[in-house]
Amino acid sequence: MKRELYLDQLIRKKHNGRIKIITGVRRCGKTYLLFNLFYNYLLENNVSEDHIIRLALDDRGNKELRNPDKLYDYVKKHICNNGMYYVLLDEVQMVPEFEDVLNGFLYIENVDVYVTGSNAKFLSKDIITEFRGRGDQIHMQPLSFSEFMQGRGDSIESAWRVYSMYGGLPGLLTIDSEQDKVSYLKNIFEETYMRDILERNSVRNTAELKELLNYLASSIGGLTNPKKLSDTFKSVKNVSMHPDTIKNYIDYFEDAFLVSKANRYDIKGRKYIGTPLKYYFSDIGLRNARLGFRQYEETHIMENIVYNELISRGYNVDVGVVENTVRDENGRKNKRQLEVDFVCNLGSNRIYIQSAYSMPTKEKEEQEQLSLVKIPDSFNKLIICKDSPTHYNDIGIKILNLFDFLLDANSLN
Image (cartoon, rainbow, N blue to C red; front, side, top):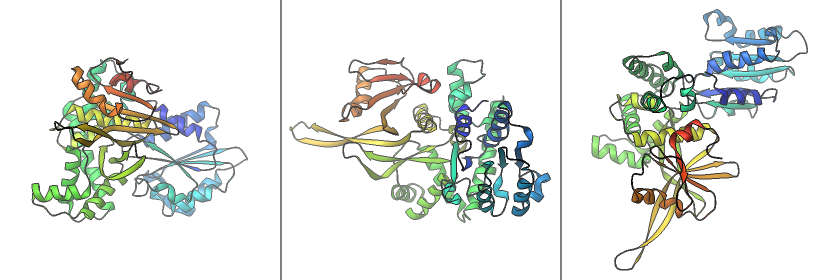
């Protein structure tokens, strides 16, 4: 598995004077990226092996090097000349005061530092703050559909059925049996992700937190907020959960990179609205596992996968809102809000996207494109559709086939 998107980022950031910090949900391939792909890249580009200091700090054999002073001395001892040295540290959170150690390496001119970690700080959106502006984050996601397709001999549709059910954690590539895939995902969710969240945040009421996670999993792509969720739990479950508690729990999920949120953006007013928000899972297989694989709605699953693909391509993704004025049967004007699934920004580039599983009729196509038509600017507007070939419709909106989008990194250009 090449993981070129992330390897290219590491290569671009070489020698930039910062600590390269690889983050991402557990089991997404961070160690493989650093210790295999990047390590081999260095060797293939004439870096001598004795100029690569590679340490797996979760290895029992490296226990002594978890002492911060011994780790610092070990690295300095292996710097024998003025050539560039590459320090690759896996699970660096096992070293107390690791921030101080890593920042200390930056004072050595011929050292380039790369690290991964899995504790609360490394499984957090705020890891960069630990390095006082001298950290550079490479955020890694599970396999995209394009990466998942590498080396597969089956059809795109067959691969989609597997991917949209079991997701893109790399460990699944070596598991053939569907029963074993289910067991792998269920076990890793409970024994790794949930345990991390509960222990890291000292959660007392685990039942409430798990119930909230179930609700988010069952309603991916739905607009919600802590107050709405609190009301739902009260009316449906007869459970009282304060909105502040719900917000804290959602923050825990986000910090663990299990879910991410899309804010609402008023396109015409050019401002953020606030709540409600949308939440998506970083890996659809984990989402399905959380629900026991009982809730497979391809429309919402496709929307989640499209969102993840946009994020992996570097876009900032929001949910768009645009106003539409219609007249009722008495001729009175009524204003209502139309939703744009994704407002995608990358630098000065913006794209508006609707996600549609199918558009079997002209009426359905007109319904999907209505919000796009009402946007009062000239940025690109398109509909990603699974059951339609790529083409421009009669009003000039691009209909982009789902697989053309997922398998071509330049499909939005």
